[in-house]
Image (tube, rainbow, N blue to C red):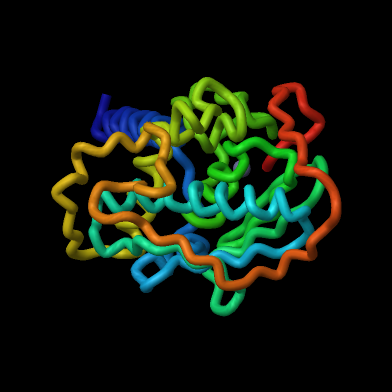
Amino acid sequence: MNWYFYTIIFLAMVSTSFSKADQEQESRYKTFSESSVRKCSMMNIHKPSFNICLSGQATGTDLERAQNWSARASLTWLRALKVLDEKVTRTVLFTCKDPHLTINLRPGKGTSHATPSYTTIYLTRPYGTWTHELGHALAGLGDTYVGGTAGSCGGQPPSLMCWGAYGPRANPEEWSTLWPDDVQAIQYNYKRVFPGNTVEPVWGTETNLEAPLNLNEPWPTRNEEVYIEDHQVELLRGPASEIDTAEDTESVDL
Ligand SMILES: [Zn+2]
């Protein structure tokens, strides 16, 4: 044996340990690239209000629910950052002037999807679709499911970004729909795009981010404010959409 032989053995060991580390990294949350995260709604959360533009088509009843669910889903993600940094805004404003997040409402069944700061959501989809799609558009997170179907988590830890609208934490009266993996993921992205000092609120560590969010008081400081200024939704006649909670639905979210 000579030095050459030992070098080869050494390199083989090093490369094995690197690939193992990479696998461990891959088995957790996935995020967009930093340049894509910088196009997401999260970049605006130090502004006086978080502006949501609702567009598309909906009946009056569905529009009212869309406002409620989009404020609640946004504040659910913001709460996971507010515990890190008091600078995160406490106000949601529905407006299509200078929107930070645009939600395109579609009646009926279909595949909801999202890109940075923009999502299309079908109005028969359950609440978890809203938090999941905002995980992409607002938080800059990727899907963690395998094989193109939400809920196939493979070796992944459970997460909203794997389960989508379903799974053991789908009920928003019991859960925020976020799992620890999702919370770690958005906090990781926040530190990427806002490096530097953060001021943690005194109540930060006492807050259970997995518990349902109360829209009237999403965190203990002061009552939140949700204002409605305008929207671009074409109002349709008709009853409220029936929410499709069946897991074998034809509507699969991306
Ligand atoms: Zn997705």
